[in-house]
Structure formats: C-alpha cells, structure tokens
Image (cartoon, rainbow, N blue to C red; front, side, top):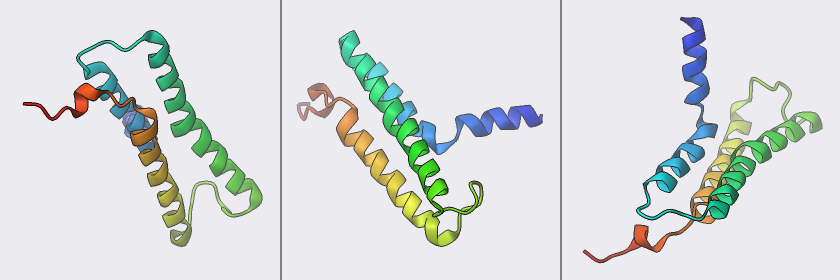
Length: 107
C-alpha cells in the first residue's frame, strides 16, 4: 500500500503538469505535426520543466538561500512559487506550438 502511495505521489507532482498538458494538446490536434517539431517540443518541455528548475533549486541550496532541501520556510516559498508560475506561463506561451486550428474563431 505504501508503494502505491509513492507511485501516486510521484505522478501527481506539479512538475509533471506541463508535460501532461502538452500531451493533451499535441495528441488532440486534428493534424499531425512533423516529427522534428514534435521532438523539439518534447525536448524543450523536459529542459524547461525538469532540468532548469532542478538546477536552480540545487544552486539555491548550495549558495545557502535554502538551509534544508526538504523544508522551505514560508517567506521563501512564495518566491519559488512565483518562479514556478513564470515557468508554467513560459511553457504555455512559448513552447507549446501555436496552431491556428486551435485558435480559430469560425463556427
């Protein structure tokens, strides 16, 4: 039972939400994207949503801004939250391809 709770906690971690959102968008558009564009989009998603935040978090821990890697004080949580929101907005507006068919206004 404990193993199942670890699996559920891992897959519902907020760091995976941009990837889940990109999967919904990329797999439900009515026309296929070129393979190279699909590979590039997935690579950017992995770099922006996993690699860069992990690197920044480790740098903040090494520099001493965070004293404990598992317990973050409330006053510092808001700055990490602002950074995470900025990352999500960057993914939403910069990485996910803007396909005209998703934004068409014709009925």
